[in-house]
Amino acid sequence: MKTLSVYMLLGSLASLLIATGIVTAAAAAGTTAAAGDPVNGKRVFFADGCVYCHGTTGAGGGPAGPRLAPNPLPLEGVTAKLRTPSGRMPVYSPEVLRDAEIADIVAYLQSIPKGTDAKDIPLLNR
Ligand code: HEC
Image (cartoon, rainbow, N blue to C red):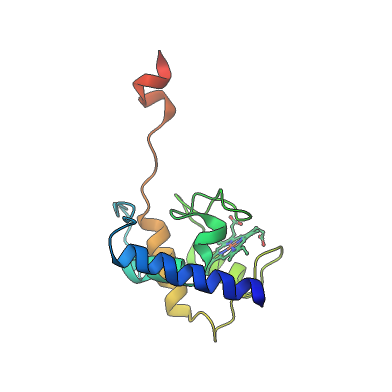
């Protein structure tokens, strides 16, 4: 639980940085609109600690978490993973994270644009 408190504290700090514009949001440019609210989903993603394991744009690269976006799992898959994680991820029960908040997180992950292909970056093709 001590670890989770640290995540929560860091989450609050991250929210503050975002609210003050010190950290800017990834451009929301998804093509398929999700049922959830991506703005709130991003807030929850940062506030509830997902960001520390999965990175600010769900790209992975944190101490533990794999890549979640672009092309995230569908809502059912994300919900199942949060309710009954199989590995090192903490359980997110409905008391901690409501179904609507998961839908918002999925909407946020869906809003994260795909990066540019390496073959389309001139500097990498000299
Ligand atoms: C303590 C680190 C940690 C935190 C915090 C965390 N995760 Fe994870 N997550 C993991 C790890 C490690 C895995 C891979 C192992 C597993 O499947 O349990 C994972 C797997 C996942 C997967 C499955 C990815 C796939 O393609 O199979 C999803 C979806 C996910 N996390 C979403 C979230 C969301 C949303 C949050 C916040 C509510 C969150 N995670 C918080 C560490 C974390």
